[in-house]
Length: 233
Image (cartoon, rainbow, N blue to C red; front, side, top):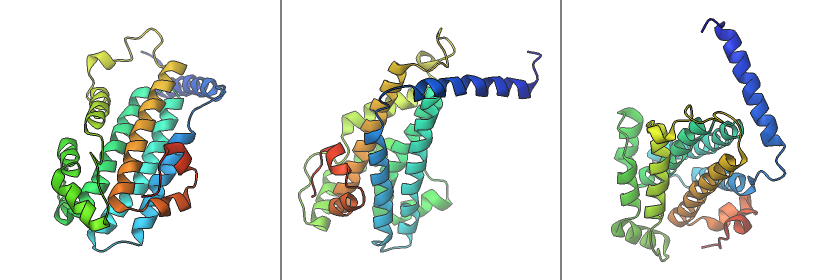
């Protein structure tokens, strides 16, 4: 209690440096798919810059770099065993990913979001993107079939619920009550990467369907075809 605040932070930094050293010692960090996916998302933003048809699309295009940045930040936090902050940032990745699709076709909502602090709910965006009417719109817009949910409804809700429990501080997620709290653990890292990969793959797949730009994305990120087992649409 009597420690100098500066010293407390120095000791914390030393602890997290030790966590990162343990992370570095892993023989396989299992991040290839995650980073390929994040580069795909950044590529989508670059491609859509050339397909803007409205002023509100400028707002939407800014989202993709933010998703990439948040994804990398989330990975870095987890590599230091700061799993709770990592998952909170990852929830933001999932929300922004849905918003990037939802707002593209909703000009008034894009400006409400930017200028009037009106945030569409995750459930609202997910239902809209997966609605039959929206699927018919995309099928006609892109001259292609849209089969099933654009974003897997149950999977997305389950992951969002897990990340929200952490963000809202459910007692079952308290790390301070764990004996090995704030220490790097390989099992925790694997669990985090599994959730990260699921989020990134859902978003990449949804972007390719919505904008019908698979060949363009694969041209910028050739590894994506292999990592995500996707074919040009």
